[in-house]
Image 1 (cartoon, rainbow, N blue to C red):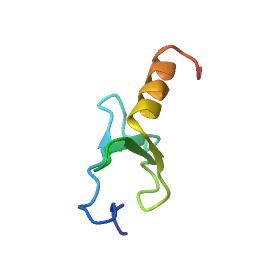
Image 2 (spheres, rainbow, N blue to C red):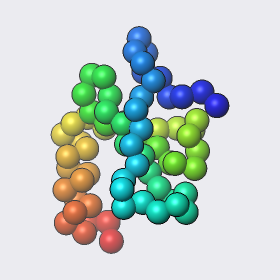
Image 3 (cartoon, rainbow, N blue to C red):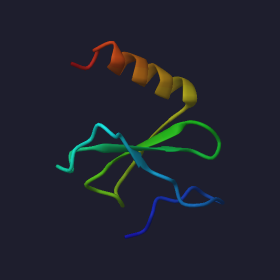
Image 4 (cartoon, helix red, strand yellow):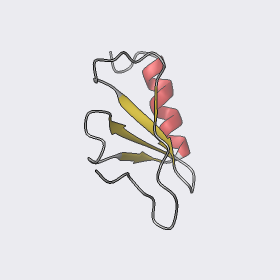
Length: 70
């Protein structure tokens, strides 16, 4: 398995929420070198990732907190 690596930089440091259990149904987030965030499925570490600018990620988090995706 290869870690997700940003061009010209170190591997990403992925973080899983402390609210996540051990069932493997989690997403992980990493800070991108140029700003923004990346998300991936914790069950597929070498799989695809979604990337967001800082503004996009902020809007996503606010929408989640406000219950928009319930």
